[in-house]
Image (cartoon, rainbow, N blue to C red; front, side, top):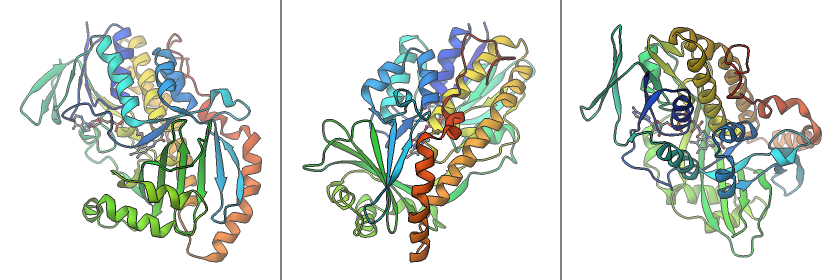
Length: 401
Ligand SMILES: Cc1cc2nc3c(=O)[nH]c(=O)nc-3n(C[C@H](O)[C@H](O)[C@H](O)COP(=O)(O)OP(=O)(O)OC[C@H]3O[C@@H](n4cnc5c(N)ncnc54)[C@H](O)[C@@H]3O)c2cc1C
C-alpha cells in the first residue's frame, strides 16, 4: 500500500486524506498547530462548488446545519441606498447557494471525519525540511521528529514551505492593498438576516455582515491600507483596530456603527494577500494543493472551496494514474487555469472595495453599481465559479478537474 504524508490540517489536508484513503492509500496528517481550536480565525463562505465536494465526502449536511445559508448578497451604498442583490451561487438557483460558517467549524467537521476514518493527525508537527531519495520522501519537523512516505502533499497554506521546496524561486504572495478585520457581536434589536449577507460600500471602508437566527452577528471590514510594515500591523491591538473602524464607519448607515459599537474580542487585522501564478505545483515525490499554490483573497469567497476541489482532483489523479509524475502533471493541467481565473475574479472585486477618497469617485461608483448589480442578479456569467463539480466516481483523465 502506498503511503502519503499530508502537511497541514486546515481544509485541503483533511479532504485529500479522506479521498486518498478511499483510493486505498495509507495517509497521515501533520499539522503545525498545537491543538484543534474551534474558535480559530473568523468565518468564511463555503460556496456551491465547495459544498459539492463535501457532498462527495458525506459532510455537506453536517456543515450546512451549523452554518448560515447565504444564497443572496444585498449591496448598499454609504448613504443607505440599496444598490442591488447578487447571488452567492448559481444565478436563478438560490437553493444551491453558499453557506457562511465559522472557520473552526469547517475544520472540526473535516477533522471529525478524519478521526472517524481512523486517519492519524499529529498536532504540533511543523514541517521544517523535505528530503527525497529514489525510493521515498522524508519530512523533518521542527521538534526533530521525522516521517517517511512514498509521496508528500503540502496542504500547508499561503506561507507553504512545501511550495518553496518544490521551487525555491516560486513567487511570493502579493498584497491586495486591503487589510481584513472581522468578528462577532450581539446588537440588541437587530433582526436576523435569513439566507442573506449584507455588504456596504462605506464612505471610508468596505463592510459586510449577517445576523444568525439567535441574534449573533458575523461582521467583517476591508480597510484600504498601505501595510508597508507587516510587523507593525501585527502589533495593533483589537481595541485599537476597533477604535479605527468605529471612526471609519461612523457616518455609514444603520446597523454598521451599531455592530462596531457592540463588537468585542479578536478582530484579526491581517493583510489580504493572494498568489496568482505558481509555475510548478510538484517536483519529484512532492506536490502542493490549496492556498499553497493559488491563494485567493477572501473577496471571492472561494479559497476553501478551491482547496476542496484540489483535494478531489489530485486524489482522483493518484487513484487513476499508476505513475505519480503523470498524476501530478494531470492534476496541475486540470486545475491551474481555473484557480488562476478565480484569483483574477477576486482581484477585480478588490478593486471595487478599495476606497477612493474622491467624492466624485464614490458618486460614480454608486451611480454605476446598481446597473451592474441589476444585471448580476440574473446573470449566469459567474455560474462557471459555482457549477464546477468534480465527480469522485468519474475517471481523472477525461473527467473534470
Ligand atoms: C479571514 C479570512 C477569511 C476568508 N474568507 C474566505 C471565504 O469567505 N471563503 C473561502 O472560500 N475562503 C476564505 N478564505 C480563504 C480560505 O481560508 C483559504 O483559502 C483556505 O483555508 C485554504 O485551505 P488550505 O487547506 O489550502 O490552507 P489553510 O486552511 O490555510 O490550512 C493550512 C494548514 O497548514 C498548516 N501549516 C502551515 N505551515 C505548516 C508547516 N510548516 N507544517 C505543518 N503544518 C503547517 C496551518 O497551520 C494550517 O492549518 C479566508 C481567509 C481568511 C484569512
